[in-house]
Length: 283
Image (cartoon, helix red, strand yellow):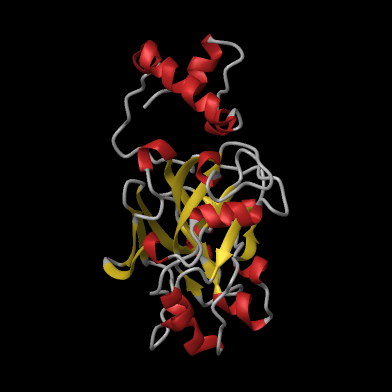
């Protein structure tokens, strides 16, 4: 690991956070790579202490997470058993998650039974934009990606569905693990060739592939950029495969004491313990 803050302190003008480097776009990413290759990696290297916890790579996003719903056919099929018939979307369907929902890849997720008794898991590929763009073509869309990460789209289903409150049900504070890293796009290669997993208490609940997406990462970027300018630091969460608790028979929810783990090939792994609000207060 490299201490970017120490490097920036010794070299005024350099960004001192990951977000700062992302906001410099792909040219900034390449400059950082050159600096590391030219000796900065050793000069500002830090030893990782055993047991140290990683925070989210961008602890406070500059804007809401843009999320894509119903982007895997099997997830649509399983959801229909609960909410009724759903049409296969001919264009991406969007909603957002508030920035305050983001937490670290190993953080506890606090559940308050007074707010929700139906907390659900959704492992998703998150895309981090690195180059500003509007009206981006699908062929050039991936050129605008800085990197990729895991985002667990934790959802309070009773809040989300009972009053059609998607934003509120998806934005429970500090309940959306993000990270553990942002892996640069050149390290990942094809974003449509990644496996996704989710386990609860060690039992596999989800296992899918980004090959199964209805709308690819490139198609999503092109579609979004037709109506708004995408900016460095924007995060797009691209939907979840089948296996969520909502669609199980009987339905299954995250309750205090349970452990939810997510993984995407090449992007690392998250592990988050669910605790009660009372445990948090006495923590």
